[in-house]
Image (cartoon, rainbow, N blue to C red; front, side, top):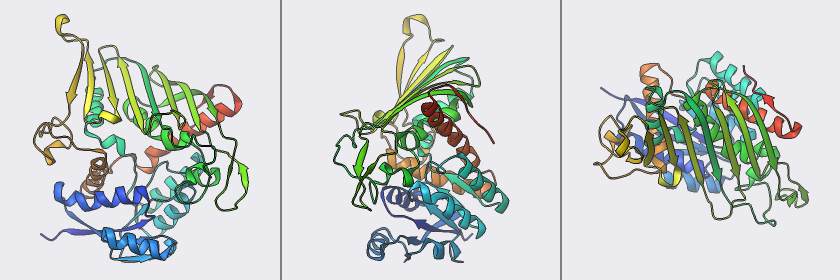
Length: 383
């Protein structure tokens, strides 16, 4: 039987554009489905650079105006890999044109904008998903299975941190390609929306709704030259963010993110402590899940390192890859996400996180920034 075509139109060609495209090229080789992914077109403002990207990665053609891309009849899905301030406008246009939408995280600049996106895709009834890819790392997915099986018992604590150090230089400018994350108008927030968004998404997936938060933020470099104006301007994003919170299930939350942790390029760790079991995961050792099971017999009780590489259904996704003991990496989390999205198209059961799922993270982010501004506890909003 001939496969259905899934013709992708991508907006943007930076780091995430490459990560997503690599996944589209890999997925059919390792995760056979009813669909054949076709790299139909990619859009960006610089005609020369987008043409070079298309030639290297195998896109059939290019556009320099994303509006033309979303209107094309030969495209089934729009992949949004742009700065955050463009997510909503592109998604709304894509939904109006009946396209499936895969959007980079965070969903929007804030929850109000995110809600409009949710309403648009649900009204248009178009498939949608947000690229919170860490859910698809096999060790993280295995942790979710253990939680869903009730292995942890009552949960007491959830803690996560995401540390980087790439903005410590005070002469680093803000704005433009590569540095839009330092520009409040393009990013909407700093490390909270960029790094903590990943931590929050996983936490909500693992442990349910966050009810209240108490946050603190800091901007260490108050002014930077803006690449677009050539002037020194105030920096509006947060360089560091720490917050406490309480989940709906009564457990306590502790989160930290910063771009000022010298020596750390992408240190993302999470830990969840339950009455019967604790789980710990480290992005730098991403194929291992650390487990403490209190039900183990006393003389063998202790932390154990589970190498999540077994090629059986017991270890998520790994039956599609190599022999046991051979690990997969960061890039495969995107491949797994595409595979799940395509399966969702086949089964009619949408792959998570959908726009509505990702909106919950947006409400937490809004509450965190509001709490830091007011210097008080804030209740997390909801739709």
